[in-house]
Amino acid sequence: MRRYGKNPDEDDIRVRPNRKGNRPRTHIRPKHEDAAEGMVLTVDRGRLTVLVDDRIVMAMKARELGRKAAVVGDHVAVVGDLSGKKDTLARIVRIEPRKSVLRRTADDDDPYERVVVANADQLAIVTALADPEPRTRLIDRCIVAAYDGGLTPLLVLTKSDLASADKILETYSTLDMPYVVTSREEFTDDAELARVHEVLDGKITAFVGHSGVGKTTLVNALVPEGRRRSTGHVNAVTGRGRHTTTSALALPLEGSDSWVIDTPGVRSFGLHHVDPSRVILAFPDLVPGTEGCPRACSHDEPDCALDQWVADGHADPARLYSLRRLLATRERREGD
Image (cartoon, rainbow, N blue to C red; front, side, top):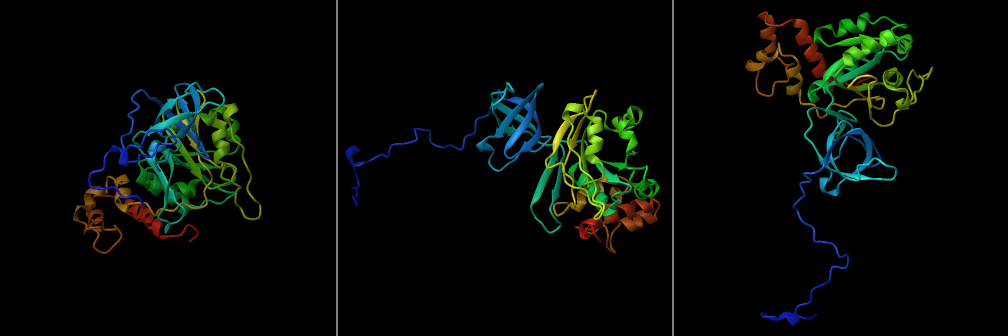
């Protein structure tokens, strides 16, 4: 091996040429101040469909974003070919701050959280009143995820022609949660669909629910015909639906500026990521009562100040019961 002295001259130093001819890597990222703004409509195997003005543009994530991923509903900055023509590809260079995030984990002991939807205003929790039977544990978990992520929960009860909605509505009456009840026949009735449009008007609404509850069927009735998705059926033996929606997709509502985001059917909704201190913010009548709580209070322990707050008449006992039932969902399996 050749060794150089303390004072080598230029002839003694060898510089390896850059065979690729590219520039050296730098930590300075371009600002892309001229990038166009867009909204992510769907994500499929690394390719993202983005709405830029009135054009649908295919794009991929820039390497400079690292491991940060864009999801449906994200507002992004896009550069490159924005014509929307076939076989063109743009590049997402920036993901704007999110105002709300719907997240879930595969299970309660899974530390890896998945962002399902960004920037939605409300979460429509779709539940069939029969075929399949309602799963209140899943409803509770979705409500907690909505509160935690900054979304307003909306209860959508389907198949009211098969069973009454009274029992479910009574269970959630203390949450002051908006709701809408539909039947299978109403999906083809313009007057009845207008009631659903009313609760979605002017908002971005993410739809979530167990497979087979009629979630995608309802979405299809709301959006233009050319954008509809395939639907499945409920297995007569297991009572479960078949997953026909495999990726989230944002769709514009017909005749309005509202959006719905259809998400894949879920069979579990892990809450490992949820901070209980954020859930109580959805109960403004109870928040002042937490001032006397011990540090890191779970709000379901002997020293919790909320018991005295309610006993003194500052809030309805049913509200405290509802809060504790929702907080307890993180400790209960959905099949329990």
